[in-house]
Length: 92
Image (cartoon, rainbow, N blue to C red):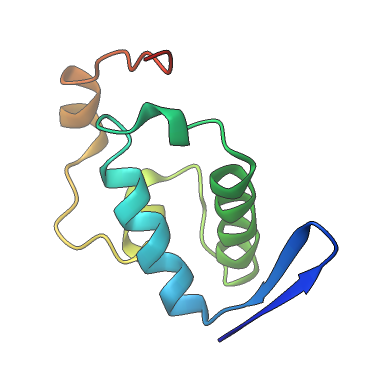
């Protein structure tokens, strides 16, 4: 893993498994930190991981397949998750 400064930006070379871990932890805590929801970092991280999953043959529209690929063991099924869904207000 490495970080390189390029002007005001930072470019990182990270391991795919570490990126999955970072995504899982951030995603699990969005309700506690809704300000993360619309950050470029989280959006780009999700986009990158979804491209990698698709390249590996994962149907990312199947949340069970996505959860499994991303490393969420024993993830709550979509029908149960939808029943508990609540709105997260990104404004503090």
